[in-house]
Image (cartoon, rainbow, N blue to C red):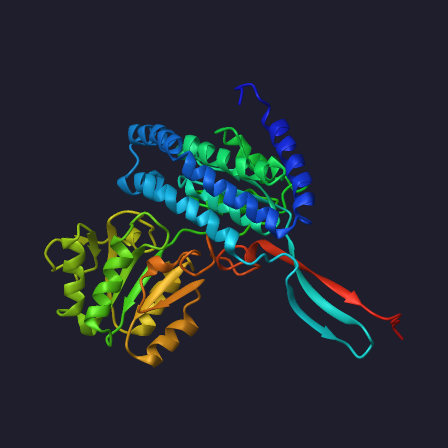
Length: 421
């Protein structure tokens, strides 16, 4: 994009093209959408060398900026991850098409028959940060649900996202669909984000995917409706009844598998009865795995821990760091999560059915886990094909936002000359 490009004019043109594409997509047959997605998957794999080269430019710039190892991991693409992107596109193509699905139907004594039917939302704006795979995931999910989308990726993934977006466009062309169905904002200028937030005539909903600063900006300034995706301040509470082997597996995988994703555990809560036994073993295992454990006073006697500060509770580290605290009982654990959590994902490790039921009923998060790694907080792992992100709000969409969550609905009412008395 030329440096002299007028941002409001650019975004107005992108919005108009998206609206026109959405009108066409709303009546597009499922097989053509699936053809576009499979064509895009083939293009991603065929162009994997070029995508890795583009990603190399982003990685070099990110290292020069001093990004953390966890952030570099979020940004990095290799052949395995590109295969995952291609597989994800095909998985979305294999999902059932939601458009036209009859969600409910019934008849009234008045003689009318009512159906509630899924429909596309229209145009979805997605604003995200450093993970280039979101370009493919968001584009695919919006298309599958019959929506046009406007993608604005982070500046760190600029070259990678452009290379992936070119593959999505190729799939659209091969299926005879408008390339404007999936548009990538062609500038790093932050003014484009500000413009998207006010495009009420072109964009039906904004989905922000990123850290607290990005989501907070969008929520404060958007005039377009927002599906909020707050950061993952993920807790694991290890109950007094926890099985030691299960607890060790769940805690270690939740924290160490990938530290830079939103489902990574950020706070470990340990029942006081486990202090000196399993609780200490968990902390030592984390330290041995290279995790910095920021411990409260009760755990600080364990060699290798770092004293926790108040700022460590309620913090998304996205790194090999975890806060750890001893709690007196389940109620205090729930109270801590309520005070410091982000309503994203929280887990209980327990063999007590009553404790699990209390945790599930009283913790108000989008995803609750029992004896399972928090790294399963992912649309793909839920069988949804992929996700745009984890919605932490309560309206319209909550938890993994996949194809079904990217639809609205309308009522179709039929009668045989029925009139209201």
